[in-house]
Amino acid sequence: MSLEGKDRYGRTVAVCSAEGVADLGEAMVRQGYAIDLGGEAGNPYHDAEAQAQAAKRSIWRGTFDRPSDWRQAHPRDQD
Image (tube, rainbow, N blue to C red; front, side, top):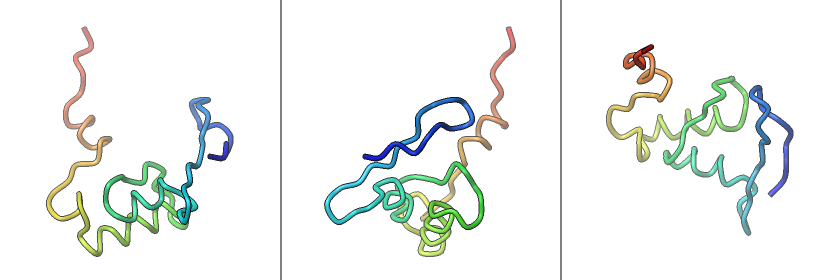
């Protein structure tokens, strides 16, 4: 595991690795088991997600709502 700094919310960002896998997060995105939350073209997760979508791997086999889209469609009550 390597610490990569902080995200925009001040949370520590880390990259986890295993023998033969430099970035477990990217590997999960590439296989369709996770999504790219950054959404910026050119970052490794964005490219990995595009490959997973094109190959219709895992979550990309059918319909899928991104968490941000689901939250927008189902706002919390402001009680």
